[in-house]
Amino acid sequence: MHVIVKALLIGGLLVACGGKDTRYRDTELLERPPILAVEKSVVDETVVEPEVSQEHKKSHKKKGRGKTGLGDAVVLVEAKPMHIKLDLPIDKAWRDVGLGLEQSEIKITDHNQKRGLYYVYYTAKSIFGLFSRNKDEQHEANFMVAVQPDGDWVKITAISVNPSDDSDNDKNATSDQDALLLDLYEALHDHLKEE
Image (cartoon, rainbow, N blue to C red; front, side):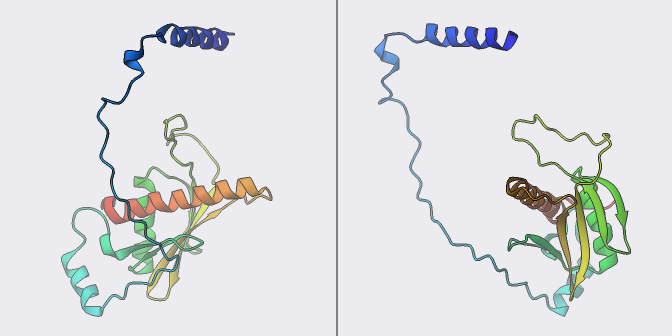
């Protein structure tokens, strides 16, 4: 009932604000933003893995990573399915992925290092902040983050724990998987802090 009354009051206020004065309807004299040329580029879904020379690997290890982030040791592959590649040994990658999940405030509910799986609870951040994540809440895992060796690289993928038959839910799960990987990629690439 309160919602209806509020809606009527807001509607009445908007109607009262509208008048017949044409001064406020003419927008010709208002400043307009400049028109920018937008160049569209076609993004190829296949990503060629960067070739890392032995010299680069050695210099990367000597210099260290700096204060935050793994930088060039992390590659986001936007092919279907989206995944992340790390140029690290598997044990180091396992540790850094765990740190990245924690620092991204993605709740780790369980893990199995032998199988290379982190069980996590993740919800995409809402634009309006209505569905904020509470780190202390108890949730069951809705995604598995797999950390698996892939040649000289380590491949990180997100897998929905409860796949459904509904195509709308599958699209939401895929977008949440991509959002999870994007958050993790950003943390690993730019913000990872040693603890």
